[in-house]
Figure 1 (cartoon, rainbow, N blue to C red):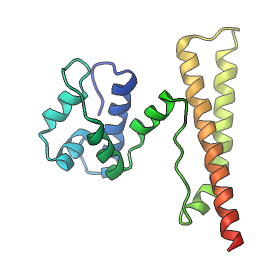
Figure 2 (figure 1 turned 45 degrees about the horizontal axis):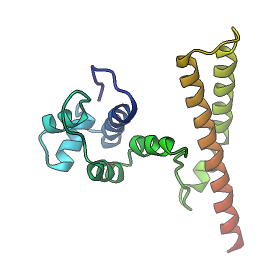
Figure 3 (figure 1 turned 135 degrees about the vertical axis):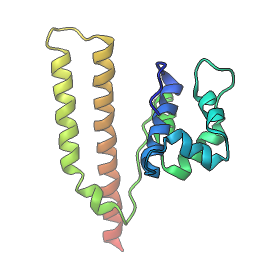
Length: 162
């Protein structure tokens, strides 16, 4: 979903969730809103109205939970985690531990991008709100990768004890 109106906070997270649903469904030409509406047995315009910050009524928490669970779209959960000072981390399983271990290269890339973002933002000795927002996003990405790696190592260690 690429909304025309600017979205902030929860509405921004819901718009991102709709994009994730569209990507996960992989249906050619179908938007995340259309896929979600079909899953929820709704008219797509009803869902568009629930996602519009200028319309009365909002999307229910239960609907967000069903869509998150069914499509594996974490944007709303990530937003809620940030609101209470937490981060959302995908927990490793035995099946994906090897893939997460290979994530070391991705972790290194995330750290590099965060350092570039910080040094670029601070080049003039100041940081604008937009620069701070980008920098925080980069640092949260690094934090998530570190936590994923910690949990992967923990999982691999537990498998080694068996």
